[in-house]
Length: 159
Image (cartoon, one colour):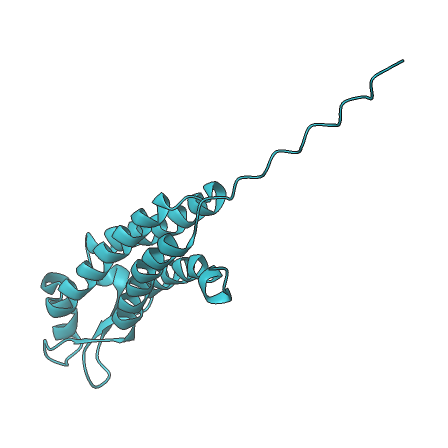
């Protein structure tokens, strides 16, 4: 199983973690028709920290897996990605209302909030991190043992 697609699995974990982290700087919610916009950092009080930790855990697990050539770090990356995905799906249905509704009402657009592209980038990043970590754990094997060098030949018997 040394196909190129299998060797790209660890890289996909890093790409998913990076997309998850970068999504926090993008717009998550907005008021329609030119109203206020809110980034991931502005929208959440505690979930943003959890999402940043999940992205960092995915990147750290990947680095540990590359150094040790073991499969177990990918389990942590998969769990962190799955947790981030669950949080993002939860908050996409229930936006944090306290500060966002005040900001939306102040912009004159009413209190209706819609999801913006940052939420979808975060969901895609978390999904990519979780699935590619499972994929990498399945295809990355332990290091192959190096065969010991044969002992040098015995000296010929003397006269």
